[in-house]
Length: 201
Image (cartoon, rainbow, N blue to C red; front, top):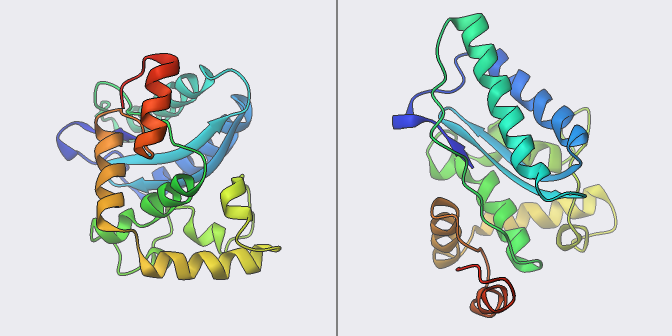
């Protein structure tokens, strides 16, 4: 997650959003990231991704994406960068929590009252996931591919999952983990990561 300072707008027109989406795709290829979900909000962005090579590429990707948005902002709008100090990250437990995080990200426009439904918000990965865009460049995690044998089958199953929404407790856990740069997952996952790597959940 990358947010602006004091909720100032990061994107000043529709072209800014379009440019950022193009950069997410291009830079994810350059830095070898699998993009599972994304959502661009007026004051920042949320991305769920898995490094395919060097884990450090995630930080390099976020730096390059942030710099690209800031450079465009200065060049076209004569405005300085409004990004906060740094991006926030939360390692996610494989399995059901991956699917929950995809849902959390793609429901943000609804929870933040920017749209009446995820489908009506054009700046997230949800419409692409449903096959409603010209291109499909998401890298679906295993948890998502298990929902069906085709894009259409998976989309229908996921649509039902989204319509039910997340358990409020799960949603709060994900939100807190991201904001505090903690682990997202079960208590067992948090304990195991701490035991192996000394990383607090």
